[in-house]
Length: 623
Image (tube, rainbow, N blue to C red; front, side, top):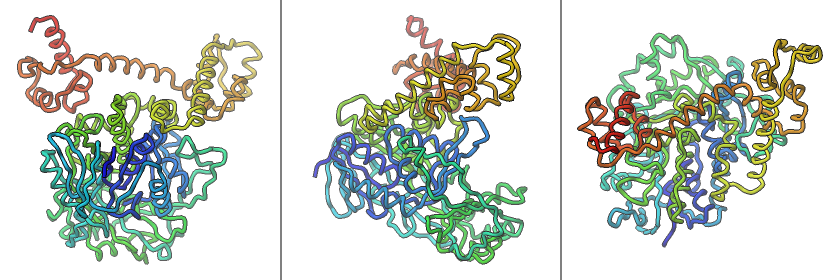
């Protein structure tokens, strides 16, 4: 059978890749080991979080599915860092894991142009330097113009629970061994990573009265820009907080000799920013306690996920450890935690389109590229699906810049810097995070989604209306002024605001930290008829306009560097002033522009300046 696009895998990356390709008119096939597990949340029952929420909002603005399905199946919604600036706030939702999986699978199976095959891909079919299809364990051969691999933790997946080892891609599911060999045989550089999950506890054995309750936001904000805020009233369940203690730490420490992480049983490198509890105790011995978040997995709340207690310790140790924690003294695990290690491909093997450099028409997305997290996987899957489809149509690829989206930062980091540990998105990774806020993802990216045919006309029209209102509102605040008249001072006093002594623009007054939307409407009555989201944006623009202006100037300088190409025939070794380390990195990564070079770890601003001078000299024929 012949397809335009084949997607291997039905996880978060595979779903976004397959849906995007099919919706862009491609005849698409998703091949997955278990059809009922399409959309399964392998680890925690949550979507979003700090920086991860940004990714979900961007996926949504481009026409992806994760945000919409989260709104449909969420059982708690919170804005993290709500008291801090808008650049570092993050949306997070607890999802009903069962309903999320069913909803995603239903969408996949109901999408035109998209077929599903429950098989395991054993081999990539390659002709010359291009992939042309796949062969499955059932000896079926499927031909395709493009193949996207989104295998998650399934490539030679190996589960560890104490001394017990099981070949699996997820608990109870087969590992993919032959495909890993096929990728290796194609000459792709590969490595081994590790991640883990926590025990799940029978709800009726938990004493919630001994824990701190953590409710959702009183007025929850949906993830998707396509979900109507006014009618969004999800049923919300509380989470709970408890803590490890000295006894917990003693139990873990006394069993280090049985921990696969320390015995040499696990080869793969684990996530530095989401370590197992035994790793936390080993590395942070001075900490008296660690947070444990007790989270419902479904609306029925029959099982709770013990977030913060990821482990691969033996079951008997896990049970003793769990029962040492307040509120879990009589806990009965329904499922024990485990570690899983798996193969990944060095992401520097990829172009920014996520197509491999060595094999044409082959794209990789998700944990196979060394990332961790549902959101990072979904973002890559969406971009791989979009770019594979654009390539079939012989159109220019969509490559998001670092100043356009967190997705751009994610992919640029991976393909230029690579990773030797599971990569997780943080707001600190984005140089221009004040411009790349969650709340303006639609303004930044929805134009792309609409052009691709992934955003409908009504949604796009609402975004344009919002953008127009923001422009009008900001212009009004810039162009109108207050003078310190008796009436003005009285109005400011009635709002609880400091008086002014000189002629002042409304924008400068609105920039005060004490200013709210209600005060803004008093200051500029014309804004009362604007949409609530537009008013929020106008206030943010006013409060942070100086910082935003500074970041826009930095972006302008960055764009200058992007236009300065590094000649392919440039003799790096002949450039005096560059250290051997810098020379080796430039030769290894072959950055196309000065900006790309500046993003490589260890390449200093001084080295960029030397490169710039040398390129100019070469252009003038002086070298």
